[in-house]
Image 1 (cartoon, rainbow, N blue to C red):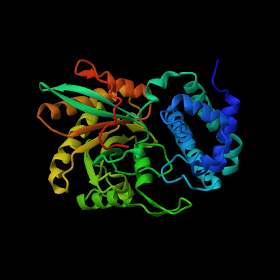
Image 2 (image 1 turned 90 degrees about the vertical axis):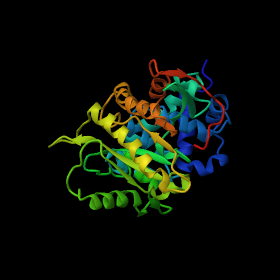
Image 3 (image 1 turned 90 degrees about the horizontal axis):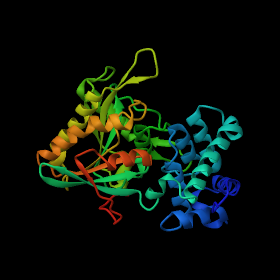
Length: 357
């Protein structure tokens, strides 16, 4: 028998939508608190909400849920009308249309995930911790990777975050659901209503293309642009490496992504890290990759990982001492990384990792 029922969870979620995360302690939320006590280490409702939203495998739906419930970076204290307005932008509809249709769908999907978690759903193995360690054998030595299962903008204290980009280095609008949009949004300086006062990640990337003489024309796939992180510096992020892996398809909104370009970009990220390593105090050491090309690029997780891993393994075989991280959004992607074929000895470690999130 279920610990909670869908309607009770949905009723509680409507309260959260109106109040936002900053007022959770003022709300009763009996169903949510029951589910949180059973499925989160600290029994926190906010932790349960983040876990449930992270399980949603549709980018647009997940991003709209983050804004609707005040879970997106910088939105905790936004007014409910501001959160609803931004969520409507994700779907490209009016606020009223979103309120009457998409918002109901969003909250319903979050409720579904919470009920599954309360019933011991498929992601239960990940409910105890947003990170795990995986031990890799390379060149006769063991190397530990840190695996994160949460939105990229929740990373903490990782020196470099890799952001997939197109070959024009054109960043998506901040309200979009991609990794690059999330990093742009998290790196922006925003007012209390969410208005962007400064867009440093976008500006830094435009400056980089101007300095390289590539403004207005594409770069070669695999090119990596290193920029400052904007407001993400407050989270211990020191650099963003924009990796050009997606080639826009003329006359469409689609992209072509080739595995060979994914391999080239991964190798180039590690080369730029080596070049910049000693230019910072303390030196750069940790880098976090998403599964390049698996978002808008449309590559299956398996194909992305198969393209990235040879470059990572070659770097490890050369004796590199980087602190390597991967960040994914779904338990399915996490499970894939945990069982990298033949080269990996999976090692689940529930002990606290080094500086992360």
